[in-house]
Length: 135
Image (cartoon, rainbow, N blue to C red):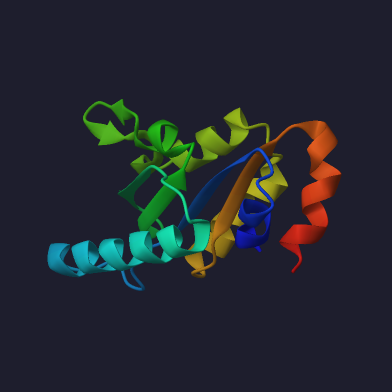
């Protein structure tokens, strides 16, 4: 789905948030391996350079963030990534003007191993990309 938008060269910014490990007790070596694999998969799909990082959320576990919002999620607050704080993800999503019930759904989806795709696009291009996301 993302690749369809990339191929058409539509001016859009993506961020992808997702779980790095199935369980919270993954070792650092396992996280590094999974991180490398995830970056490679995203690079293959997106065919472009992107920012990438990971953090550990207390309720969800190890998550990665890729794309234009990476610096926001990884901003340091008292030596911790903003997104790793208990209410950090909630605050970031609220800052993006996402409604509370949608945020709760996104957090549940992340806990269940699904991805969260955040797209920034000009309003007049929104209708152009909607059908491409369904493919």
